[in-house]
Image 1 (cartoon, rainbow, N blue to C red):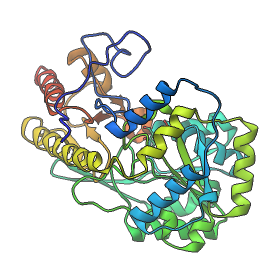
Image 2 (cartoon, rainbow, N blue to C red):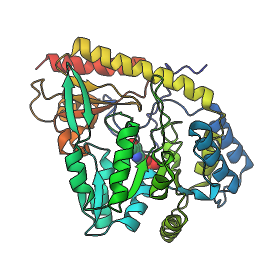
Image 3 (cartoon, rainbow, N blue to C red):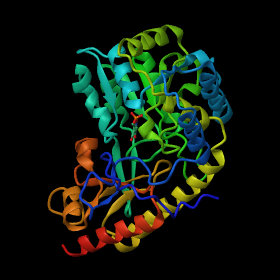
Length: 387
Ligand SMILES: Cc1ncc(COP(=O)(O)O)c(C=O)c1O
């Protein structure tokens, strides 16, 4: 049994991280990594590599690609050849490469807002237009939910070169329904738009929720899709920067791989070692316990907010350790992120970085011990009471 109530001190002075970015009295609940150590089998693999002592250049092995393919088969019954797997230096690099091959100044990147802040950087980094398809927001009591506005999606997809899907969604925490996935894919294929499905959060499922990769839905969809996955969020190893693009379409894969090579996007050997162990199944017991703990944290967050800050609205995530909170009804003057940083000494993520719909909202990372979560929420409650 892993004790997720105990988290290591991350205030080491070496580098900037979640715990050292802000002054010492600030409780960090922002950037998307968890406060838990990675599972033992991964740490053992890394120890072995260090003990061996030679840290030379390494390239992804056939065995690693087979491990990735076997995991997709085991989890979802999704079958593809191991050659379809390309290692990338993270998911942001992965979708940035895709934008380089699929977008032009006339055919932009379609995103569903509010969405992960790095999705908004593609336009400047790659120099292509961004096409927003904002979700429709629903409020039921203090619970928020979001759905696709199909009129806007259909209008925007016609101008896109690539659709960058986030499933499960950051920051909204939702898993898209099969029906929605099929419709989005159909519209993309009809308009000759490449689908890039960022599924980095797909193994962080809460409750008994299930997930199906978009590309698993049909061979036609798989032909038009680049799926991006990584063990980084699931097993809390994002600092090792290793992810995978799964591209069953050989022609598309060739173009993608060429770009990855041109940019010399080599994954570090530690990332490759750790990923193989992460996807081997050896860490699945840990993952099961983690999901249970995160589900408890999600429930604690929703119950706490509902009871002690009823004017605050929030999502009930299906997956991820990210909550999305709406402070527009609370009387906070200006940005709630600034308000809580100043008055609660809690650092959450500023809602506006996820798109203009995020104004008055924040993202809160509950991938921490229950005690730290409770402490952060208490500080926020007190600050709100003082308005
Ligand atoms: C949806 C999504 N994609 C990508 C990333 C980052 O991936 P990487 O660090 O592998 O580039 C994150 C991190 O929060 C994320 O939430």
